[in-house]
Amino acid sequence: MIIGLHHYLTLAALLFAVGLAGVVARRNILVICMCLELMLLATSLALVAFSRFNNSLDGAVFVFFIIAVAAAEVAVALALVVALFRKRQTVFVDEFTILRH
Amino acid sequence: MPLHRPAQPPARHLRQSVLSHAGPQGVLGGVRVRLSAFQARRGSYLGTHKKMPASLFYAFATLTLVSAVVVAGARNPVGNALGMILVLIGVAANFFLLEAPFLGSLLVLVYAGAVMVLFLFVIMLLDVEKLSQRPFSLRAVLFGAGVFVLFSGATCLLLWSPGVLPSPELASAPTFPGAEAAGAFATGAKAYGQSLWGKYMLPLQLTGFLLLAAIIGVVSLSRPRARPAKLPTQQKP
Image (cartoon, rainbow over all chains, first blue to last red; front, side, top):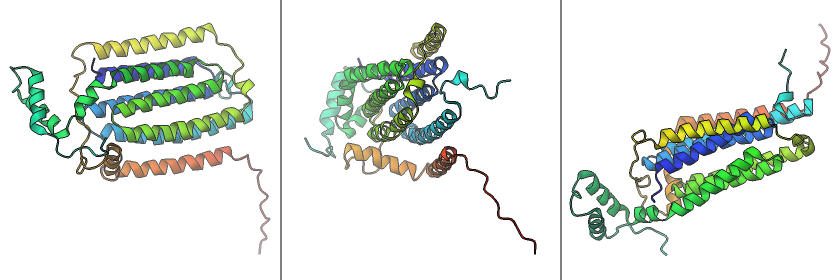
């Protein structure tokens, strides 16, 4: 059986769904960050598959920018996690209730 | 095995074999003839690609999905990070199968080499016992499973319903002047360079500014809160 665009898109959709489920179900903020990375990876996979099957390099170049932006995002997110942990001694998002009234 | 692809493959032989595979009638339709000429120009590249990676795709897709479930489900954050590294390896292998070797190696270098090391640093920096103390609640597990089933079911239904998505023939790898003379890896990197420094010059520079802003933000976030410094009392003249 020839692997086509559908297979790669299905894999990307499943990967995105796993990441989405992790984001909505978990409470640990580090795990939430990792699941966000999973969703970014799924979109990258879909973009590379589209660009491969359409004979164009544009989607693959977008993936380059996605990787750069994700690296910056992870750095800022982890700095925020460390700052929050220093202040509140926890990483569970349902215990961050500073803005609740 | 020669390093370089042959610049001039035996065109007539390949075209004949393609035509004989396609059957006696209908082979002179425009698309098919153009495709066969294309294949003849690119050598036997497409043929090998179409046969090889079915089992490889399934193997790496299984690896990716299983370790993605580990990422979303493991209770120990170190296990999450290790599952994430396996996911990255699987996705990078899929990039290689999609003939984007530059992106695959970039993914391993940047993500598995830098981002995941950052995650592990933070996990070790914080208290692991405080990170993984709580058991799952049934409600959260059911909620996550419901979201997974809904999203993936809807997407796959949309994907596999006939006529929604055109299923194109596997096109040839992106070409650029001099692609035949270089090796396979140089194809990806060189075409990338031409794209990045030509068509996507402005987004590239904006990405550089974004990285600079991220560096400044991280430094100012992770500095300990400075005490208000005593201003030197100004003397009025």
